[in-house]
Length: 193
DNA sequence: AGTATGATTGCCT
DNA sequence: GGCAATCATACTG
Image (cartoon, rainbow, N blue to C red; front, side, top):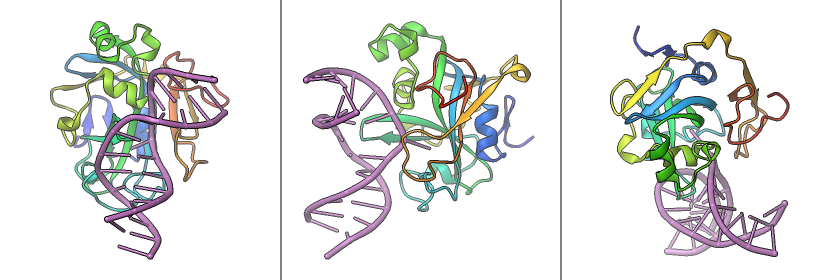
């Protein structure tokens, strides 16, 4: 089916894609791990980069679903999103945390820390650990260097949800999702997990 | 042109 | 808990 990669339907609304992605293994050049935390951003979402219309930075969000949207955060970090819904809709899912499983030594070297819980816990840390950079902006997620591997135990995954982090608008929207009980979140969820 | 604001992190007290 | 780093974008004039 068009738009479907691994077990993910990128044509679906962002909150659904954000939940489908939990448990999926994300690798960039063979380095990465299981996605344990995501956030959804929709086109008509005051907290989204796409809310104010197309710009040079968010152009990838207005492109086809199933591609990467890479942006610079606070002038320092490179953060990775997956574009979803129809082309031009400009919805996306921010990948916020991984449970590291592949390329631990590489990620430790890139991050400069040993603790596996500090390698990919947060969008900026994840970007550094996976060497996310602007060259990946707009690239398809179904082709190298990206790999998305289905979660073998997806039906058994238990998810938690809560408000998104670091935003000032639409703060009450519970569009942050995580794998219940994971020790690799960027921050705890308010009540569950 | 100038100013304010971030989908953050790490270091400081 | 506070705050600097650092820069693209948005908003003001």
